Image 1: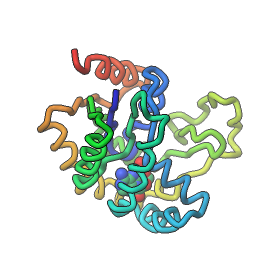
Image 2: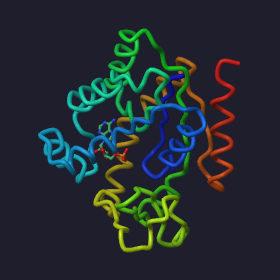
Image 3: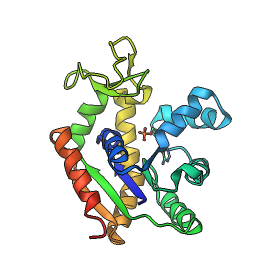
Image 4: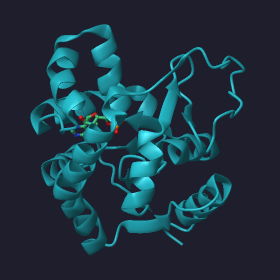
Length: 217
Ligand code: AMP
């Protein structure tokens, strides 16, 4: 099964992705994580992407598509992928169709985790992340969540530079301008499944998994 997971920054799609990946045995490919890894390793691609990321802008399609094409074509994806944060523009959605055609596969469903704006801003500007295990915490809502790897004692927490309030607002504007057409497109071709991302995280996980299991029935 090949799935796409869409949702605004702060919708909790990363948490949902982790759960779906475990339950369904899919290879999780998060474009934001791929970019952050390049930035950390100071690759040519990372140096190019960093400038856009710190402004809350999307990295140009040509760079993003090339990076994802290379990743999806690797052998560990044969049992299915869960694409997280890609595609975010119509150009990327079209490139994904072409790539899947070439690989003789197709997208089985597009999950859209929907969360109102005011919740997104509150979540993102209070989010901190553990440098060791990448688990997100929230300064007020979720301050002492236990690290699944047992390594988080608080000293590794940091705020992603693009979670600063001004950048959060810029990311949301970008999201609505460029990603809303992608959501409309998947709705039109009847692949879109909308799940509410509001409420207890375990309830959202159950709803998301049930929605995926209902695909093709
Ligand atoms: P994320 O972790 O998904 O919020 O992504 C962090 C940042 O990486 C975004 O704000 C963009 O600058 C960049 N990025 C991630 N995915 C994409 C994409 N599909 N297209 C363009 N830029 C992306």
